[in-house]
Length: 391
Image (cartoon, rainbow, N blue to C red):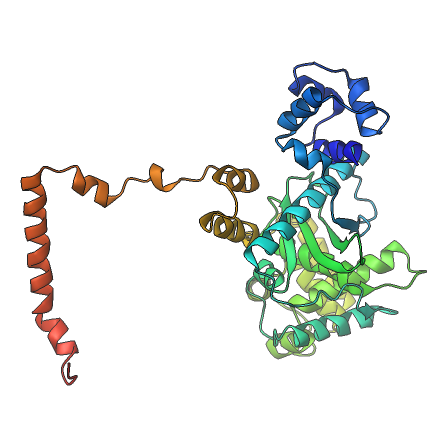
């Protein structure tokens, strides 16, 4: 276990074995690190402490055995990620999910909603549409547009993780099971930072599709991807909502109208036109002409009227809650959030400023405050507001 934990924390930080050796001041060789990770050799206590310091973890974390097993949904075909990039992403997710579960136990914030992993069988693409409708119904979303995908997912016990990743990475989904009873205890959808809001929203719900849809065993990757995208688009733009908004059939939609729909449903222009075509609102010919127009304008990667990315807040909220309640240390809170947190001692207060005044200055300030309080009590506007009420 020690070896796999060393490798997990090293990969999560994007370090090669050579880079780890350098961080440790060269006290061991790359070959030694390799032996530790393969459990061929065990580092001395001194070396172990150096490894922990280089990885910014406690030595005890390297010995601890995780109580969850994380399973990943396959990367999209053609993602082109190197094996080292995949290792880094998966190690980061493993570590973050462990921390999320520890935090949720400390803050007692889980709301009891069960995560419907692989709950919706899909034998044809239309089944993905039905799954999206079922999710909207069971999660009581109605037909209104989803104002915040990240907020909605976090409310439903799905962790939303953001990581630094190459441009070719769009997202991945994962779920965690207890090592003892194999029960699913957590699920996560992962997106890359620095993506437009419309791209981020569909990517997250596409990954949710991979989590909740139960694909046929003989399904190829193309079918799985199409089903996941169909699910995500249907969740963002339900068929009835689209028909109510634009009609059941249109010969054409102007760019101005499409931009309004983009803002309303939080979908990219390209995903929106695909959705309209899937629902039979616009023809194949219109779709082809539109994508030719998009390519001509150079909008395939960067559309006009880009939406702002959404921010996942679960981790920040619960770290701050745990810190405020003295459930974790100040240092640990800073490690988890990756930012410096001001303590009460760092923040100048009016009370300290008041006590620094001389006695005569304090008396003068108190007299001024007392007069303001008296004036407030006889203020005519305030008295008028209270007219008719008895004390």
